[in-house]
Image (cartoon, rainbow, N blue to C red; front, top):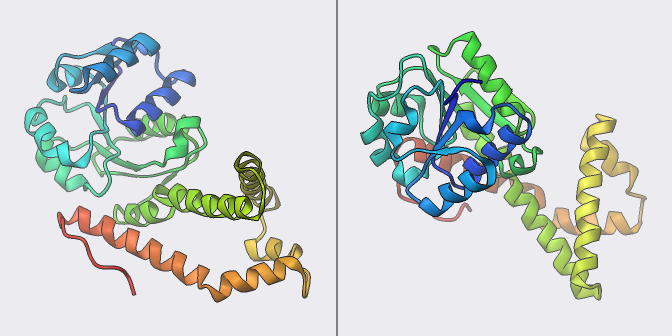
Length: 279
């Protein structure tokens, strides 16, 4: 690939995860990637470890780049857009992974039309993530193909026709790993309380979660079918499930996801205030 195929603005955790996936799967050569971030230590490590180039400034990074990945934290977006406004080539594709920031906001702030929004999740760091994405009307078929190739380095990707659906994606898969980690943590802590070492309890729980997800995927059955298969009448699993249902697991998960969704919508509308706990 020619020089400067991809410019990456922001090198936080998710930006680095995407970079890692793209380089490991040889979607881009390191020589064709330029990164920009005010944290010189981060960019220095990326240059040393992966062989990417480092730009002196954001405008220098995007100059001539075919694809620009915007991966800055939301609180820094206004200042980044201020210096990049009108600086992207009209032929460039902008890919944003910033939660809650609409295509319209990016279009107005950057004076650029070819924009794709992506909601990835943290397992993208190992190529096991899943992303939801939306493309503005100005994005060409070729640019969509480029985006799909980029996202494939992170795991499966689902293209949505409505931008508003990305708020739902945020609640389901974007924040989803945190729900799973909390459930794993609770199971591990219970195992330790019962007498297992933490290392053994975590090994048992992690493999159980991983194996259950793989089994569900291979069987392609409704989760309730598989749950019923391991639940004998009056048995140990039935007793555990009774307490989970009695504790309101389903409704608590649903309320939590709705709260996440509503927060994502509020961020997109520029509302900085937080609501109280969901009743």
